[in-house]
Image 1 (cartoon, rainbow, N blue to C red):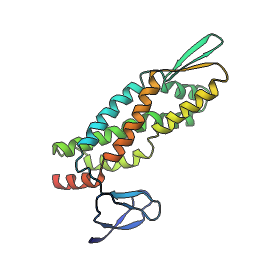
Image 2: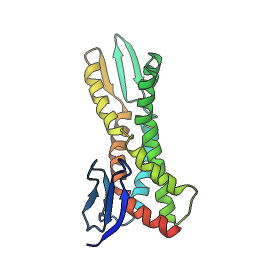
Image 3: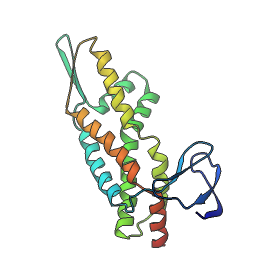
Image 4: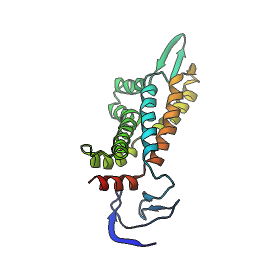
Length: 204
């Protein structure tokens, strides 16, 4: 395999590395932070990423529209959406935590899916859409803040704790959150940045 002697920089820690050709199934990781710099998989198209990003946006809308759980204490029943927890934290004065939860559980997943959808659509359709290169770069940074799976686990822990105080029942929202977690994982696996770079180079 021939190495590209032009040094590159890791987008996460800025450590230098030498690009090289990879065989199917191999990946190139940063020696400092282990960030995946390049992956050679069997997927040679961005159509799967485009399709799953579209699905993820639909699931995100559903996950934020349906209650996650219903909490009943002494006859007082409350159905909770994802945004309910954010508003409750804000009402109690924990605005920094509320903003963090809002960004990681709601804003970042949607922004990441939107950016992947935009870039994948531009590449698949062969269109030079405005700011596509900048959005492709931003999607990688936003991905690290998309913590839907962590939020799903936090919901499970919350139910265990709240069950000691009253009656807790799962609602349809947790189903959409679980599907969204799987979908965001698949998007990250199918959105091949090497293919994106080649397609954008071809588009000029």
